[in-house]
Length: 127
Image 1: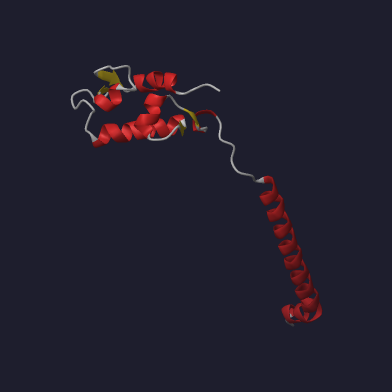
Image 2: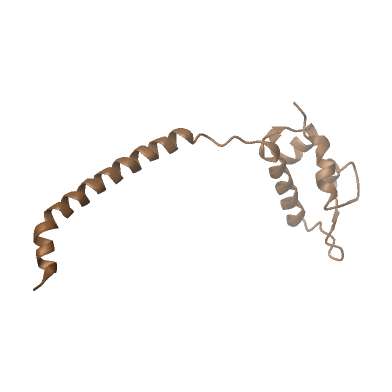
């Protein structure tokens, strides 16, 4: 005797009804949770080194903008260093300053790459 057939005949309609109501509930839950998540998500608040702040006139001249985040400033400085091949080939930790970099690095001829953040500190205006 095949019990699978009996089970299917007796409980098939009940199982189908349960599946459809479960899927409808899942859809309702997912759409309500999506609206709850989208309501709680707002534009990310930029803080710390990611927050754009006013920069000194020298750094503004170098970057071409009056406000920048610290990460953007360092990124653009490194881009300038790489494009102009200013890194010492013998000592990669050393940067040769061209005229453009000297304006923001206290007229130094060369700086260490760890000095860059320290020398940039004075160019970010505290509000």
